[in-house]
Length: 163
Image (cartoon, rainbow, N blue to C red; front, side, top):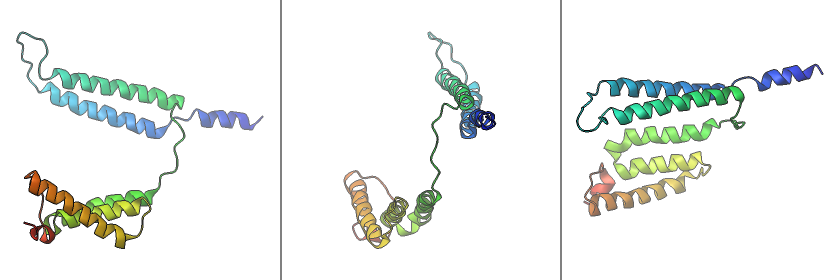
C-alpha cells in the first residue's frame, strides 16, 4: 500500500522533453511573429497581405505548443527508448567531414565519406567496402548533375578526370 502513492507521483511527473519541444515551438513562433510584424500590410482589394500567412503559421505553432504542454502534463506521449549516441555521432561526424572536405576533395569523395559514416552509424562497420561504394555512387550522381543537368557541384581531383 505504501508504494502506490509513489507510483502515482511518478506517473504525474511531466514529460520534460515534450516541455522543451513546446518551448522551441513558442520560440519559433515568436521569431515568425517578430518578422511578420515588420512586414507592411498592403491594403488593396483584399485584406490578405504579406504578413497574413506567417501570422497564421505562428499562431498555429503557439496552439501546437499549448497542446504539447497539456499532453506533457497528462503523460500522453509513449515511453521513449534509450537514445543511442554512437549512430548519431557517426552521422554528425560524417556531415562535418563532408563539409570540411567538399571544397578540397570534391563532391564524390566528400559525400562518399558521409555515405561510409552513415553506413557505420547504421551498423555496417566495413568501411573498406562502404567508402569506395559511396564514392562511386556519388561520382555517378555528380556526373548526372554536372553533365546532364548542367548544375554546378564542387569538383575535386576525381571529378576533374571526367571534365
